[in-house]
Length: 269
Image (cartoon, rainbow, N blue to C red):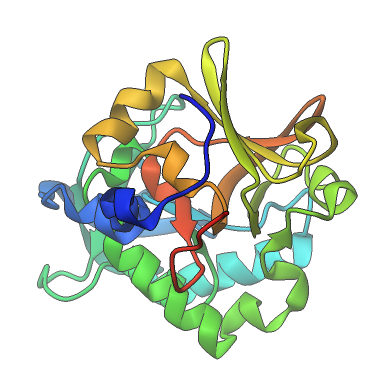
C-alpha cells in the first residue's frame, strides 16, 4: 500500500468505508435456533434459559463489573427489566457459539417481529455496538440505534466518560488497556508493515494511537469494499479492545469497527 495524498476523484470507494454501508453489502439472514424462557440474567448481555443454555446477546458491549461496577449493575438491571421471566425466540446471523460454549444470538419477543432485544438495549443507551462473526450482515440496526441514543444522550451516553476517547490523548486511550472503547481522531497516515496495515493517528506513528488490520483479515475488508488507504486525512471512529503494542492500538477484524465521521471528503495538497 503506497503513500500519497487523498484525491476526491479517486475516492468512489470512500462511501463503502462506513460501517452501515459495509454491513449493507451483506443481506441480514437470521436463522431461528430455538426459543426458551429466561430464568437468570447474568450480566448486561448474558442470560440462561430454563433448559440450561447460556445465551450472550450478539453485537453488544456493556461495562464490565471489574472496571465500572455501577454501570455494569445498571446494564444488568436493564436486561432484567427487558427479558427476565420472558420467553424469547433466538436467531443467529453468523457464528452460533463463543469459545465458552454460550449461544450468541439475537433475541426477539415471542411474535418474532419488530426489532431485536439487542437493538432495544442499545437504543436505551445501556450497551454499545461491537460487530463480530455473530452479527454477520446484521449490525446495521445496532449502529442506527446507537447513533440515536448517543445523540439524545440516553442511558450511559449522558455520562461524558462513556463517550468516545480522543485519539490525540494517548495517555487517556492507553489507560483503557484491556477494555472496550470508542476512539475518534484524524488519520494521518496508512502504512503496510510486515503482516499488517497500520492506520496511524499521529504524525509520528510511534507517538500516538493506531488501528491495526492484520493481513489475514484484509480480505474481509476488501470483500466489503473498504480500502484502508481511503481513510487517510479523514476523522474516523473506531471501536474495539484497547491493547498496548508500544503505543495504544485497537485491532480491527471487521470493517464495521471503523466509521468515517467527517461530513465531506478532505483533500491534501
